[in-house]
Length: 143
Image 1 (cartoon, rainbow, N blue to C red):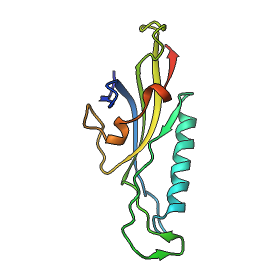
Image 2: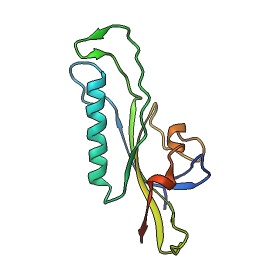
Image 3: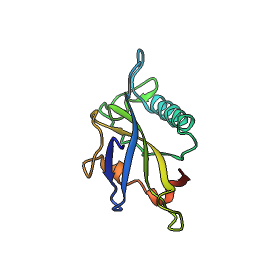
């Protein structure tokens, strides 16, 4: 049973089977959000998703970056990502029409950021999440 169903802008429905959310800057004790810090966090997040995805392809939705402060510190200007980091496992109908629908499905693990901790659903998911090019990124698996 899916946690939620998301309708992509392509019209394809994908089911969310697992979702991990965390605070983007949890554990930041010193320093400030900046490009080098954000790039390292994103890289670690993607590598962690790849290890946990059981062979499913992983896609990062590039996060929006805001620059609220005009002054640069020692590590460059302040750069802020959305407050919530999400890693979701999605599946849908098989991509290959030759595959038996009862025996195959497509799957993709997606990493994205959003401003608030809410489960994406229907057409109300973050626009960048709904724009994921499923047919190009997902892969079929035999059940």
